[in-house]
Image 1 (tube, one colour):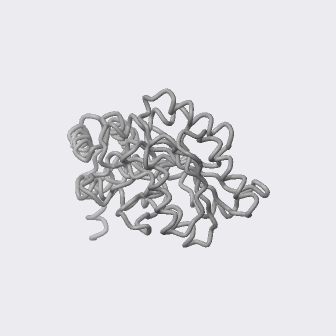
Image 2 (tube, helix red, strand yellow):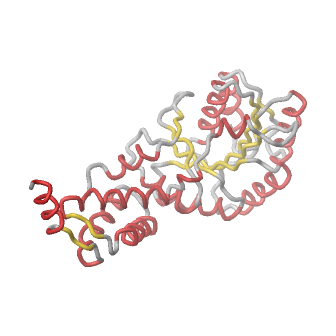
Length: 299
């Protein structure tokens, strides 16, 4: 009897989702995303994907909220390129280039935490028994080599460097040569942090890539930089290509939307997040945690 009653009530309260009866909820979703600093174009794409997933679906009135949230999460997962997520340590230790180190080229403008992130990556590699050498290929900014030298001294890691104004591609090449000779597994290439509108910077990055053929190009983006970080990601991606990103300063007063927007612009995954100034403050990106941070209890 009770089973029949439950079945009857479920049938009675079922609704078919369409643009009209989803309109208010989807608008609320868009506002929530925008309030969390998700760029308008990315927010609109998530709303559109959610609408496509739900349109025509028949759901019980009491389960509508859960169905909506599930669709939103799926849409955000797609934007975050979760299916292309990878384990950097696994990639390095399974490097298929015979007798050649795994080469990582790191991009990012000054102030994003790029140099500190390189130091954190060194610590991460050493914690996983992966050998590494670093190339000081930012030969433009005064103090860049000294800053990196201090970090590498703290971490007891070899830094390959030349004088200021030296050819950055040559510095990276020397580091790779050193790694080959010493059988070091990984080379991290620091690059200049000038603005992406600087023509010489873009040409310099293209040359580093052409001569040194990196296995991975990593973009370091500041979660607090607003629209600036989106412009940076787009320009770097257009010029040299981005394979993955690290988002810094997520421990600060950040709503996280910039990370979602960067993933949408580059169509590549976020692999780590920076959550502090310590060398161990680099965490694997957790998409489920990130969605909870963005969405909270909304929907």
